[in-house]
Image 1 (cartoon, rainbow, N blue to C red):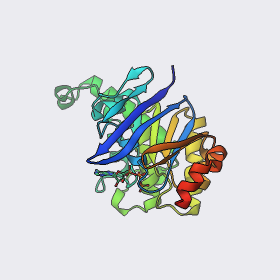
Image 2: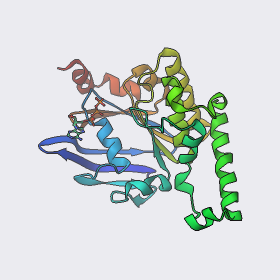
Image 3: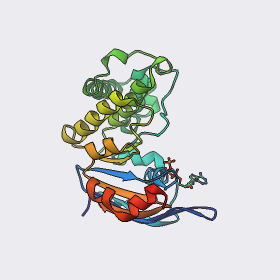
Image 4: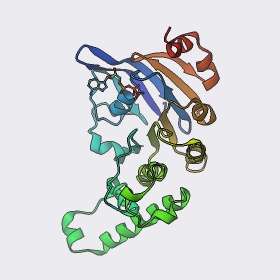
Length: 252
Ligand SMILES: Nc1ncnc2c1ncn2[C@@H]1O[C@H](COP(=O)(O)OP(=O)(O)OP(=O)(O)O)[C@@H](O)[C@H]1O
C-alpha cells in the first residue's frame, strides 16, 4: 500500500482541462515536489487534494483510505495540512492565537463543557498549548509569540503559516510555493526547515515550487507538469534533463 496515491485525477474549468489524468504515488517520509510553468495546474492539484475542489474524475487514496469525497473540513483530522501561496493567517490576531487555530482539528470537547470550563477542557487546552510551544521552539519563533501578524515581516509570516500547519500534527504537509516572496537568505532557512520537517519530525512533504535551487536541495522526487498533464517523474536531475521538460520551460 502506498502512503498517498493520486490515481488519474482530472479537473475541468468550463472547456479548460486544468488537471488532466494526473497520477503519482508518494512514499512515507519523502519530499515530493511538483514543478511546472505558470498555469500548469500545480495549485489546482493542491486544491483537489485538500478537497477545496471536487475532481471531475479519478481517485485520491491516503493510507489506504479513499479520500476523494471526504469534505475539506475533515481532511486536517485525517493528517493532511497545507500552506497557501498567498499566506492565509488571521492578520489582526497574535501568532499564538493563529497557532492555536491550527489545533482546531484536534478539538474533541463540546461547547457546553467549554462554557463550564470542565476539567477535560482544561486538560485539552494544556495539551494544545504544549504542542504549540513545541512548534514555536522547533521553528525558532519565540520572539513573535504575542506579536500581531499584521505587524510582522513577510518572511516571518511565511514561517508562521508553516508553524500553523505543523500544529495540526500532520502526517502529510502540502507546501504551496514555500519560497515565494522570500529573499535568498530566507529561502535558505526555508530549505533547512523543510529538511528538518522530514528528518526530525518524520512528516511527508508534498510541495509546489518554482525556485529550482530549493527544489534540488530538498526534493527526493519531482513531478513536472504542463497544461495539466504529467511530463516526467523522477529524481530532480532526471526530470530536469527530460527533453519534454526542457521544451516546456523553453516554450518550445
Ligand atoms: N477558479 C478557476 N476558474 C477558472 N480557471 C482556473 C481557476 N483556477 C485555475 N484556473 C486555470 O487553470 C489552469 C491551472 O491553474 P493553476 O493555478 O492550477 O496553475 P499553477 O500551475 O498553480 O500556476 P502558477 O504557477 O501561476 O501558480 C490555469 O490555466 C488557470 O488559469
